[in-house]
Structures are given as C-alpha cells and as structure tokens.
Length: 72
Image (cartoon, rainbow, N blue to C red; front, side, top):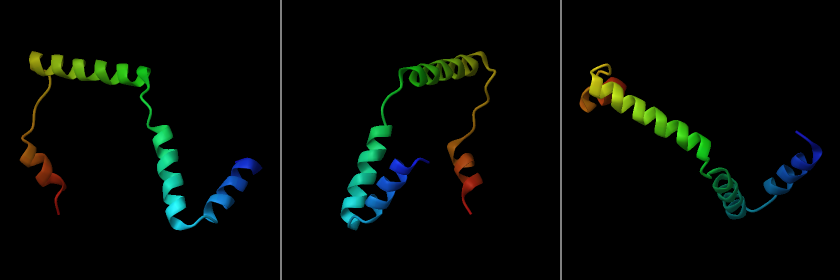
C-alpha cells in the first residue's frame, strides 16, 4: 500500500460516521460495474448447466432439502 492510499485511509477515518458510510457506499458502487467478459462467462455457465440438465447429466435437488442442510 503506498503512502497516498495510507493518507486517504487516515483522512477517511477522521470523518464523521455518516460521511464514512457515504464514502464506503460510493467506493462499493464504483466497484459494482458490469464486466462484459464476466457476464459472458456467467451466461455461458448458465447455458451449459441448462444443457446438462436437459441431457439428464445434472441432478436436481429439492429446495427444502438444500435449505435444511444449512439450517441449525
């Protein structure tokens, strides 16, 4: 981490809580941009899974069984 980033972090930590929240939300929003390459990979993955399901190569599970597995 370079000194410019460290300085920004120190300045951000000195802000009032509501301003820090706004800063964090803005930073997260800046990272939440669509990436056509990743979107294309996900579209291909979805198409591959549907094709596997239709061929009978992909087993399905009941939602209630999946949820029950992760509930305490």
